[in-house]
Length: 110
Length: 120
Image (cartoon, rainbow over all chains, first blue to last red; front, side, top):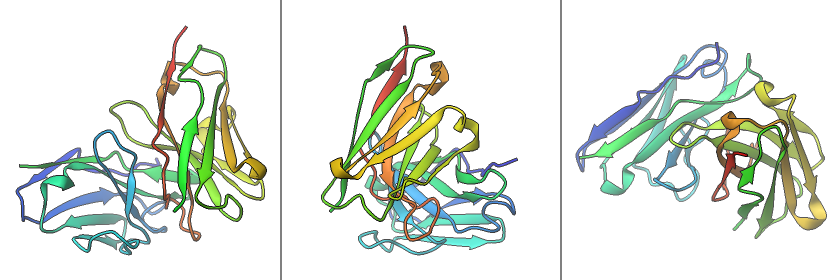
């Protein structure tokens, strides 16, 4: 089954580091690079991470990505109120033969 | 920088065809891949498929029988057609550039999105 699992919610206080996980399988995360998106309320998603850990220009280095085996993580350090958003992982799935998004994690900044 | 803008009817009757167009500005449509992604209200993202400037396409298997994408380079536009729509097709539809540099799942930028409601 082609599914990538993210926790539905996460939270943290300003200045903290929050880690959001994305669990997949050998047909998706295990064999393809992971991307991360931030979706602020009412807006389109924005790329944060591509190729597991690389940041496009303009993305603050507070955002970092990693991958190990069939799981990936997005870390947000120095948490700010404007980081309150939904975060999605994405990758190619070889069984699906298409792009797969995780279910999304809603981050609340307390 | 490249900007994308979706356009099309916001209301489609059940069993009819959803048609949307994405206009690319600030850059050229040539040489790149262009995708459609949708998001039912309050839910997650679903990739629909992509079209290359050359005209080659790739669709997600679950929608392949109902989807068609086309591209008009002279107008800097690419389009989505989804046939036989049902209430399950109600979503915000986004167009986006990508995949980028061979990285499947890397979409940037995105259009602002357009909500399509299915109702008689």
